[in-house]
Length: 299
Image (cartoon, rainbow, N blue to C red; front, side, top):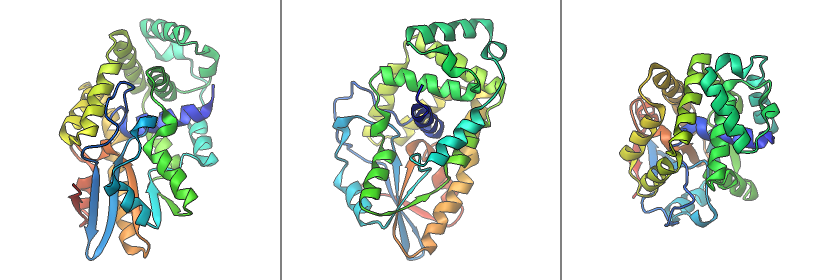
């Protein structure tokens, strides 16, 4: 199994879980209200865009308000440059283990996972020596691929490609190693609970419905609704709440510190962060406000 898919699925789902995914059945390509903010501190300004980590061919082009700000920026800042080999190497190293899935999952979930692998034509041997947190993310990625989601058309990846073609400087708000470490921080209990939730979602045929709800909220620019769907995805169990805190809340202070540093640099920055980080309790915009950064949503 191609680790590039592993890495893309891991980063996409880990950064915003399922908050930023496009359904194959979506009818409208253009965003009616993009998640675009102008950040200011003193007389300096930085653009912040809430992204999707996956996409469809008919999603493009993006609104002119987004493209014009991207074109005028000298620097593209992303959570992590996933095109770098060291990002994939970091994730591979953190996912290595000698634990066996049948020892960390319940007998029921292990049997369901084996059935899912057979139905999806995924070889069980591909998951040997991989920690459960990565197996979870790959399973989600496989399911989304079957629903027609294209990781290669993710907005952050497309911005990276366009920035490199335009010879813009690339900055990483976090970097692959730190981002993978946040995903790898899941306890065995937490990862097992996540696998149970995924298998239940597949069994109950809820994945496609959730995707439609999320993409409709994204295209309408409805942050509160998007946040509610994300919270439902994590659930209210102790394990789900711990996962959300680790994947979102715990990362925001360092992300805000990195973005704050861009105001001190001479070149203009266009920052792309998964939109799931912008809403809910303890979000990134609140972390930026604590550092004296004002945010204005660009209509």
